[in-house]
Length: 545
Image (cartoon, rainbow, N blue to C red; front, side):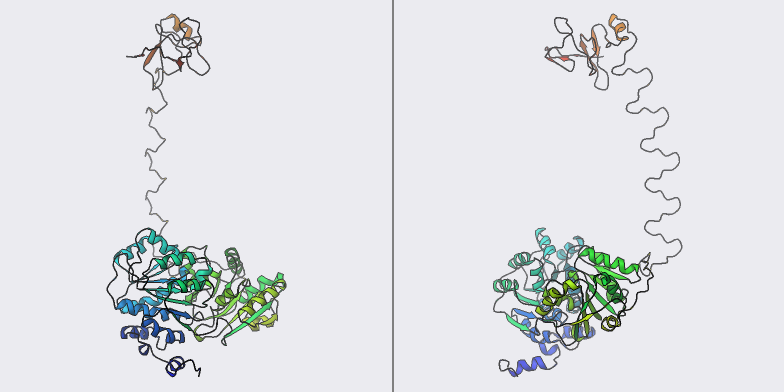
């Protein structure tokens, strides 16, 4: 026994304990039992009592070690003991780095919250604001949010953090790595200074220390395992492959039996792999930040439910997402950072299960990849393989893909057939009018019945500007028929819709279509006071009657 740990603490660590003995209320214990959760994990045993006592807690544990309940149970207990939340004023805040993790936390805590009358709501990007705003206005005790969307809701004035009693930062190191530290700092500054704060992460280093020093008061630290992936239930392999064989090796691994997660460095790389897998007969789902939230949610649900056995993702899926039964993690592109390796690898061997991690390495990547793994505390087994090798099948369970291209279902599952006469989006019953259709004889914009006058048309005999009648009974009229302007008794009528005035002294045309009035000397030259045929001589034109 460690002399720094007393007998009571050692017993709490070594001996299985039920949740009631940790101080969890009876209603929550019963709700946990209904969910099939009877015995707490180690991270829960060591952190829940301190969190229930109101202390600030730093908890470090491997992903999948049970951190969600480690902070969720104390938060639910504290909130359930108080009043209902005021509109737009949640009483507890759980900050997470990704949308998927927010939804996972919400799904895990919602049935427990229902048992004690506590309402939860997610506030994440990629989904409409209206439902989140409506829930906040009705009153939500716990809000599970990503930093960006929570900041937007605060700016809109629909969420205020004045009533926050306890704040949780889950995967705090990832939020710092993703550049959320300024946003998180700003949000924490809006919560009351005396609020309880719980910080849980796989690692507690780097920028996380900044948050701890500024916002946490005399925190107690619990670390249940080292920050490495070298656990006894996880095997680590480096597969050295020729460059031209990389896709064939990846495809044969993807065709294995069992649930597999694969990681690529870029969104384009993820989409390319999924398309190439489909071409050789392997159905896989793509998960990355370029997908809409609806697509990401559906893809993850298909993987969890077993409709898809392969999930190809960027590092957005490497943190916090829990899927039971992932037996193999494959780094198609080797990680650049030890933390990336740890969190990718953490998708397997979760909560005591066994699993394997394989990294595909080209010859030029071997040295840098080994350095990353050693920093992560991993000593992998190295194997040279090619597509179809028995060694590849032995390590990963790889097998030859079927070669039959995957055909996506034309309709969502359960809706492939529809009753006769059932109307579907895009269908229209016979005879139904649709935009662009027009019944026979219906007038349409641009059509005009025979004889209808239209702008620009003129009835026969109507006079138009610049028309030249052959004569109008004056000497000038005779000249108009030869190309001059029409004059009547020394006055000229302007045509078009702006006509109606008579001006004196109009004669010959100019190339702009305007008459040049005679000047006072009768020379035909235009005066500098004329503007478009008007002489500013102080006289107003007389309206044509």
